Length: 305
Length: 226
Image (tube, rainbow over all chains, first blue to last red; front, side, top):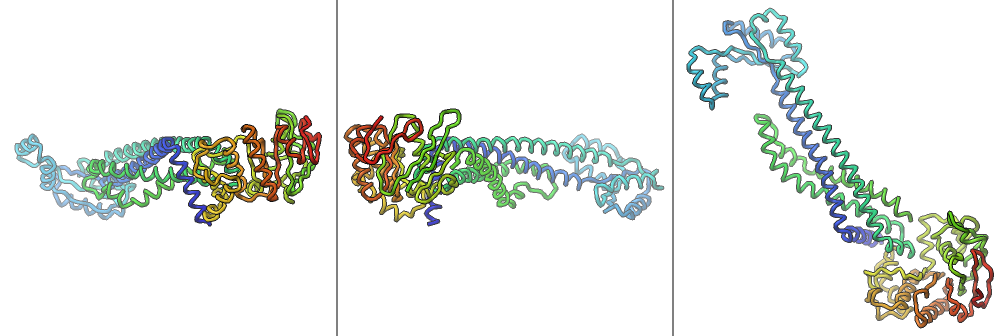
């Protein structure tokens, strides 16, 4: 009995979808756009989070010493820095090593290679690379170092640059995120209106049938549930289509994004494949919530039984 | 069976449609409600099937006071009253069989029951051989017989026919009236709303005449008096 009823409601629901096929298609398309914009915002958020994280990982203080400073003094500074609780580790880069690194970094640049071989003496200073426990500790390390007895030995340090980069990056990603949220909100609103309108149109084209149903004593659920089902159908279809578009697209752009994170443990496509079911589930949930909300509004307004 | 006590219904912005109507229809009766257009005949029919709600008075059907009927109870009432309208209200894309089955489907009847009941009612109206035709392929009289068959699927105690012959020619009118008489013989109460004097005069059954929303005559074996 319940199965028969359920079967008939399903039948009517699919019928609604089929009868206004083009209208249904447009509705699904709008829902796909909505889900797509939400997904893009979500993706941007993941990428931005990882970008900031990797920049934060990259942050350090490079302390450069005067070429005249002997190695034992540098080691003393290293020891002093390591004694601070804020410091995670300190790496000593000797003049020779600095030269090696520099040569390696510019191995394709002939001009630099040539000029290096022309200068007989190693022009690069020795340096200490300081990593703090957390990002907030850097300024206090710098202050302590500047006020210490070793401050005279230090030729330069490069901390401020990184801070500026992080602040800028955060500002940009925040702005993109806010913009994305705004666009998604507009899409959600449009989607609710479109689903609402589609169901209203369907109710209008079927007014005769609905009238007959009421006349012959149809149970209310036979009148209402097919429309709820229709809206759920829009949601599921839209989610599946979105995923079908989104994943090939992600796999296509993933190498470009990943190249920005070279040297870091981040693979965007792997991240999304690992979270495939969670994403699909979330999309279905979002689209069903959108379409059922508008379905309910349409039903309560136009299907008074 | 049907009792109306001081029933009044007004449509906003217009005149009073039904004014202080008192009426008692006994089980198994065949009652014609007559009157000119706009005298409240259809309003009266709509009140009985709870498509409209009365402002004043009481409507009792089979001991059930439907004056304050709840929305979810309306389908239950509708299954006890078969309704036939002038404009047929058949679904053009469904066959005769499907149109009749539809009424059972949407009230949750099991498929097995549908398969036994539909041929039965088709036999009552004499359309067994046209079960798989579409409404477009039927004459006006046949369409109306399909509607009557559909109204019978729930075995209603009351059959309400609002101008069932309005769109039909004389021969078809006779067929439909004969069919209603046949159904009445099975024990179903028939309420026939019409403004066709010939039908009323030939029936020699109870006639209630409405004028300007009020009952002006109620005769046991009446004639069309307007």
